[in-house]
Image (cartoon, rainbow, N blue to C red; front, side, top):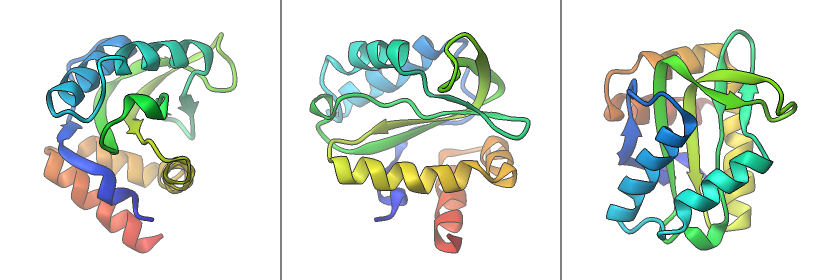
Length: 156
């Protein structure tokens, strides 16, 4: 399975102006609802899940977040990608008392368990390479983000 097939140009934001993870979630949920990709419960479920199971990851000098929620809130599968040069604070997955400024956020809107596991596996491979995160964060458009992820996926 190729995570690229879940990328939607209309759900990619380059250097977002959001200040908080809630702003990020509202941005994705609002656009997702307009496009009928998610139900009206998506935002609340995303916020609830993130409060209990934080998704921030501090890697080698950079931060990433992989928020996701219940499959029943997703009508059409997608991966939203948001980049932020200054980073958005997310609590760390392994320690809620610490946070990381996530420069790249992948919001997973997946409704099939096997899709989610496979996509998470692929994303872990992508995000562990600092060069990949740098390339994504330097992209100037949704099209560039998609091209970068396609290139990475081919080389995996």
